[in-house]
Length: 148
Figure 1 (cartoon, rainbow, N blue to C red):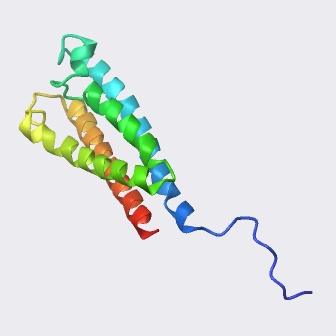
Figure 2 (cartoon, rainbow, N blue to C red; figure 1 turned 90 degrees about the horizontal axis):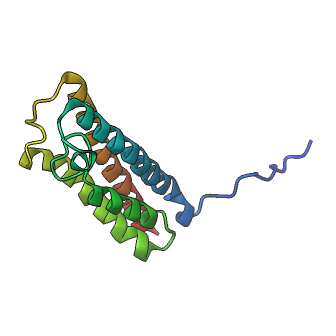
């Protein structure tokens, strides 16, 4: 038997690849949030919280993010997943801010005071928690980018 270690089949983690799981987590979270936004709009529409589907995806939405926010999240998630720090870092900062604003906006726009059923409230909490998770993953991605 030889005492020489066998070569590893996986390459060693480099500083460039170390933050990739967080980039993938941001992209996955934004994808889940998009699905939740559409589902929340459908719930709002069927429950009569909003008169039209577009209203359920607008500024008065209670169970979804507005369309401009959804578009911004997709674009920023794409940017966060880039290898270039000059692209990914600012996008990560903006997604962190977006996650915090999604939480805070419910206090200012009356979303948390809306008359919702228990199931709708649980959905709302899950949606806001998803936005906060997105912000945390973006923050972790930023930290790994700044350490390189």
